[in-house]
Length: 102
View 1 (cartoon, rainbow, N blue to C red):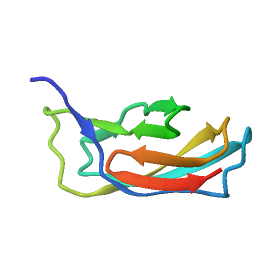
View 2 (cartoon, rainbow, N blue to C red; view 1 turned 90 degrees about the vertical axis):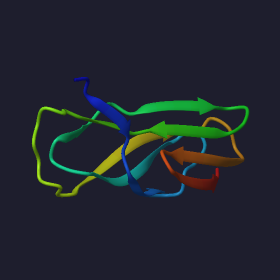
View 3 (tube, rainbow, N blue to C red; view 1 turned 120 degrees about the vertical axis):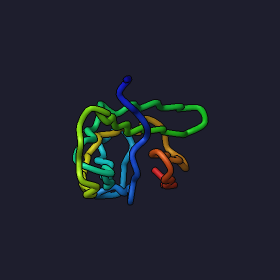
View 4 (cartoon, one colour; view 1 turned 135 degrees about the vertical axis):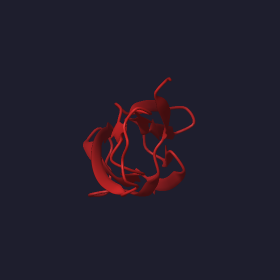
């Protein structure tokens, strides 16, 4: 049986300080894994400078051979981002959206 992969539930996304142009800003992500058999995979990030959209996908996988009690496991992830142009940006992380002005 193949391991199951899917976007993990996200509770919130925010920046620890207001982003500035050409300066690294830290995107703080809080979410959870449905049970102890899930693990996070490396995030996927795509940036569209023209449309000013950043898409972050946080994916988890579950080993179907593991038995685990359904206990929610919280996680926090920090992703460094650099905005190269000013304007209104939209950040999407799985099912959460955030709009900011840089």
